[in-house]
Amino acid sequence: MGTTKTKKKLLSGRLIFRRTAVIGLLLLSWQVLPSLDIISPRTLPPLSEVLARLWEIAGSGELKVHMAISLKRAFTGFTAAVIVAVPLGFLMVWSKKVHQFFNPIVQLFRNTSSLALYPIVLLIFGLGETAKFIIIFWTAAWPLLISVIDGVRAVDAIYVKAAKSMSISTAALFFRVILPSTVPYILTGLRISATRSMVALVAAEMLGASSGLGFLIFDTQHKDEIAKMYAAIIILISLGMLVNFALGQLEARLSAWKRSA
Image: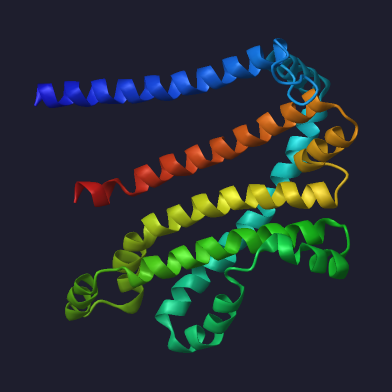
């Protein structure tokens, strides 16, 4: 038993070391290659210069303003997607009438790129916050909806039959059998939706905004402030990784019962 745990710790330590080494090598290359002019510093400034610019905009409060606006937009669109997609996913499997009504719409639009629809959204709603909300909502809703539908359909029929044989109520069947079995699928859908909503956010802010991280990236590239542009990209990547990590930890906690079973 002790030997097995020791082996697992060693394997885990090696994996962490490899990942850290790869990231460290990448960062070192980012610093060295532009410094030696192997890569043009105009295209890719040294990491030290980018971090200096990051520290500057963080200290001035500029970064805080753009981050707050972007997070508000992303959270609003993502939350609306959760409120709509999760109940609709359950209803589409639970009710034949709901499925018959919404399924053609789902099949028609599930693979339609939100970026392809963005010009239409801009034409109808203009450059205001509504257009950004719709794009983020649209992008986040579909993967979550499909995950919920797949999760409900994957519930073991034996559990459902066993519950019904004990004359369990419909509400109890949902909350004690269907919902717990679907949680891993919902959490996976949330992770995908959160990641895609960040991508949609950047695209929306680049094309029609005067604030936010996407705007900051586009604006600094246009003004040839390349180091500042990379600083904004680093923040955006970090936020995406943080959200993904947080949802991953939540998924691990809520799915622990399934692994132990």
